[in-house]
Length: 94
Image (cartoon, rainbow, N blue to C red; front, side):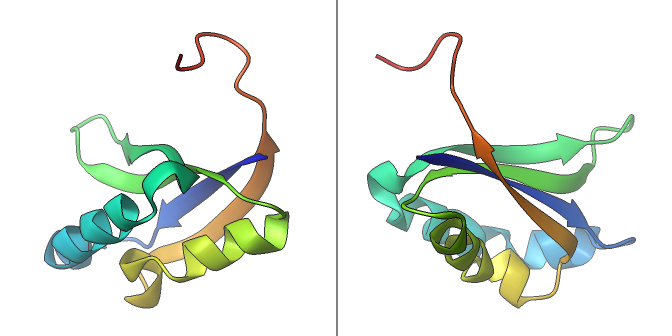
């Protein structure tokens, strides 16, 4: 089942995001096929303000555990993380 992790950065979190980015990306890559896709939300100035991470997990709790293990979450970048069941309806990957 797919779950969307909707992550909101804390105000003025850009420096923390930058300093943690490489370990965050390595973590996402380590998820292998459990990671459907991921990327940052951007403000009008093209600066990241949060993240959208979609994972294949057995339950909302398992998806939350994936999010909790993310280096961004461990570093305290996010003010909130919402886990929602998600259905890829249009243009799913082959």
